[in-house]
Length: 177
Image (cartoon, rainbow, N blue to C red; front, side, top):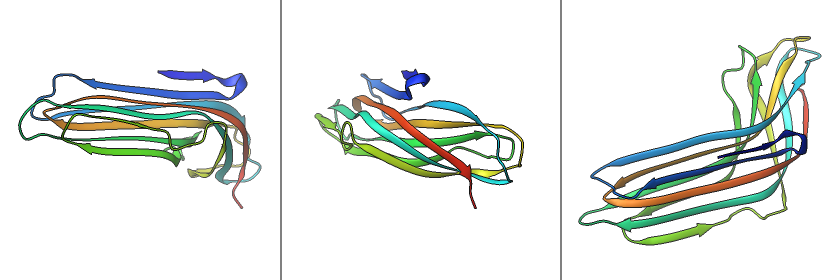
């Protein structure tokens, strides 16, 4: 699920993975992003540099596992980052600043709930575009969040949910000197 209210700078991602009848080997992944966008005209050529000030609204990791039988194991990871992307052919990919990571290996019945970030606290990401942009050519800059969750199981049923919401307080942008 994607939360997006650009006029308020409200961005968020919720990823749920359910495997209630695990087999010998099951794999699942969820990847999503939510961002605000704006136009930027670079005064000179070079890498786009941004400083994102984001306030944590919600940052939860949840995992339930159930050992189905026999030799079993599972590994689940949930990763959330603040992100920058620049729409231009010379920019190869988005850039990320990891904010919260949860990794759990489990072979039995268990429940894990974690929240590593403080609600209401400000977190900063200093990012550079993955390629240069030319002077005077307007580009679209995206600033927001990305979550990437994955799980591999062997006879372990899982319910995995990560939920992240951010208030993008400000984005400072310039061409890197």
